[in-house]
Amino acid sequence: MKLASYNIGSIFEKGLFFLIPFFLFNREKFFAECETDEAKLKEMLEEISGLIHRLDYAMEQDHLSAYQRCMILDMAKLVSDRLTERYRRVRKGVKNIMRGRVIETEASRIYREGIKEGIKEADQKRLKQDAKAMLDDGLEPERVARILHLTVEKLEELVGLVTT
Image 1 (spheres, rainbow, N blue to C red):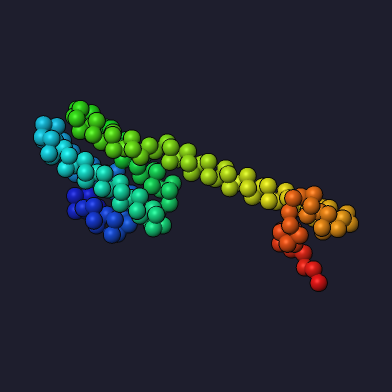
Image 2 (spheres, one colour):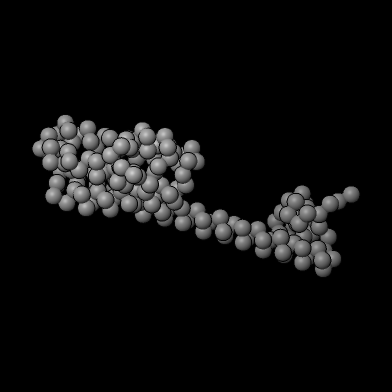
């Protein structure tokens, strides 16, 4: 597979998001010029910023997960750190763009959401078990609902009661 034959458009059209970190290899030959030419540097940084925006949009459209996006950006950051070692201005510009998309923060957000969802599911399961135990012990549904701070309707929904 020849990376040079893929531009940003074709990478996104074909869903080849894994190529994004390596896209910077195609730009490496321009780093020296960008280091001394402000307009060229700005143009390249806008291209990289646009690439990240397109990646965000692809995630919003469910073409890739937040985790995949995070990993792609993480790899892109590693590649850019290595390629820009000798180009102070290019490195600083790329880091500023990547810093706006702090990878650890995104990963932390995904992790926090997963923890929150797991806690919510565990609470719901525990509530259901408690409700069933109380009902099995003969408590009236109205009393169980009051104890658990639920409406009778919510209690019925939770434990699958059918009242006639």
